[in-house]
Length: 247
Image (cartoon, rainbow, N blue to C red; front, side, top):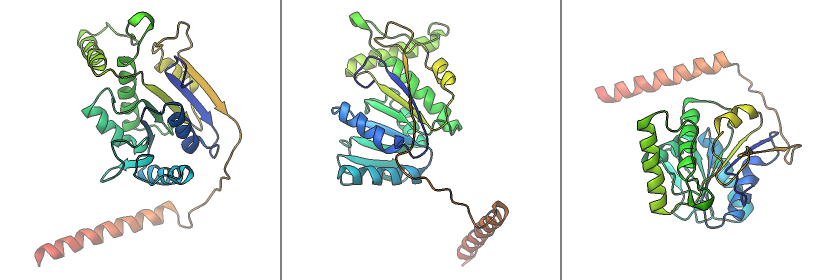
């Protein structure tokens, strides 16, 4: 897939099959001149996965090999090959650079955990993908529904012009999840064909089995007890701030 003209891969696999740790390493090996962004819905997952991958690769966490970037904590450099980020972090980067020019591949992990940030991020990544597409004969890719809105068409035309000016390569997008509605993503990415002539612009791959053991752990306290404790801690912290301010 990484060496083919297809720009999109949808990968499904059971929890523990190694999607989040192994696939980014494959991407980095196949695209040695590109940086790879791997999104996670939570900062704890981004940090722990980056630590694990750095250990497997023998990298110094935060160096040129593997790093992470979450809110208020960025352990990466301009040359970090595999960069684990939260959805919000990549979304902020997409606001500053809609083409996501820093990356040659974007891995959208845990796509089934839908949220407002995730949905907006999918839109940002799709627009960057369409703007950076190249067709045979030096043509340009054409996004689904382009031309229906003149303002949107003008924006996409400007993005493509900027992409050619910066000489950006085609963006590879990998969508991963343990449980995924394949038809939903097929329809969403329809039209992002790149160099593909047929209607197989999206590649689907299913990974059976597990590579790593998975344990199910249960919290000893119920949700109501934890919520009450959280409320009490918040109230106590607020009271402490008021007392300190009064002094």
